[in-house]
Image (tube, rainbow, N blue to C red; front, top):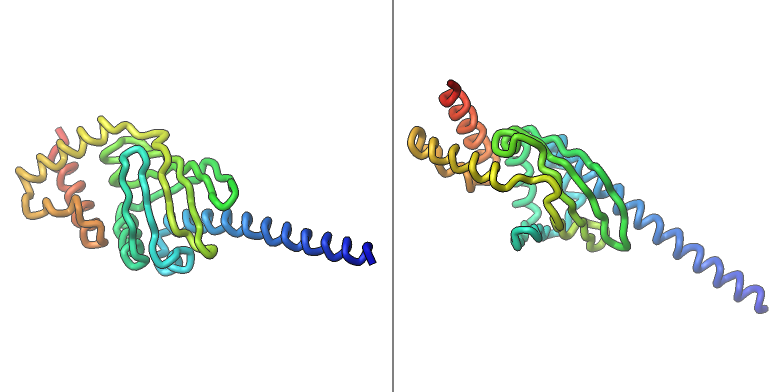
Length: 192
């Protein structure tokens, strides 16, 4: 009789361990899939990975924003305009959090920063959906170069193309296209 109880207990613990390891694999796979989708800008596939709302936080700048699913899809459309390249440099599971070091370069970042931006991020989950992405640290980001280049660019745009100056805060696809047009105008007209 004791043997049966012991066997049942071992089976229950074994099944629990399998379920927990499946969850870890699922969260790692989910995070990898998230970056694949961002890299290829397949907005139609992102919705299945996200909870109803997505909290984004940048610890270095004490900034938090909550996106609806639709608003985040629109942000990805904006991001896609700049032809992003995301590269996972390191990924690991720590309990119910996936920690990622990721590099990102695109037309906008290359223009303003002259190099990829590397961040450490934590992915949090709710009911096996991504519910929060916290940028815990900017590993490679030269704030002074970025700000200086952006100010020079925006001042030039204000003087030469004030009709386009609302692009900087418009994170829709239309805003991204204006931003890209502004970059091209700047580059074409400031070459010595």
